[in-house]
Image (cartoon, rainbow, N blue to C red; front, top):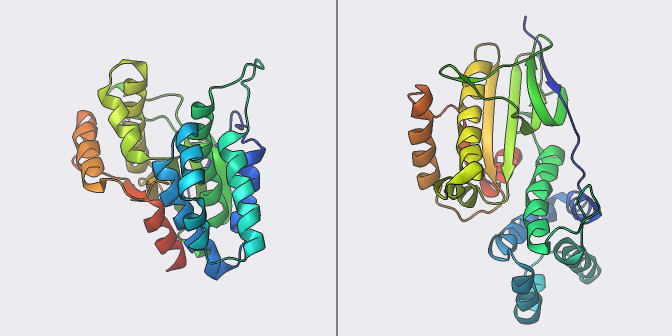
Length: 261
């Protein structure tokens, strides 16, 4: 029997605005939790920049809050948490302020990671352990992932769940379509985007040699062109000789449907 585990090199700091918003959402009553998360996901998809947030606050705040199935007091708390999420400053490890629009983008991805970690997995009855920021290991050795003869090193997945014969892993992005379109801009970031797609596919292929495996690239933004994302990812993975996608691309909506099914 083979053993799956995770190597976690560095835990990434989330920051209080992310943790506080996550804790509020996961502590809502079950019938309210998923509609509120879905509503926030739609809002967050179209408000990326601080100036957009100020405009939204002025023009659409009351409409947004009015559509939420929670009490007036809870709406007041939630809005304060959202304001902190967009407006509270952050610094890098050197103590230098990070541009606020970059902070917002970073927080969106981290928020979704935490929600998946707390609300997942899809196959709850088959999972015994879980980890964030996981470099997959099989039989206590880090799994080496290759595209042809080229090793795709230094990669991980944001969230992993596993049991005796089962692995379920997630790479979480604020907006998967936006993430993938960065690959057409050239430069180092474009290379890293393509390599992440190749890594996820080759990882799924390798893990299926040992376990029943589900790998997801998940988007917190719900309204994306999934067909384009899947078609483009398939074109890229053929570089490694893969005839099909061995991982799934989903949105927060599909994720929430799966875990409530």
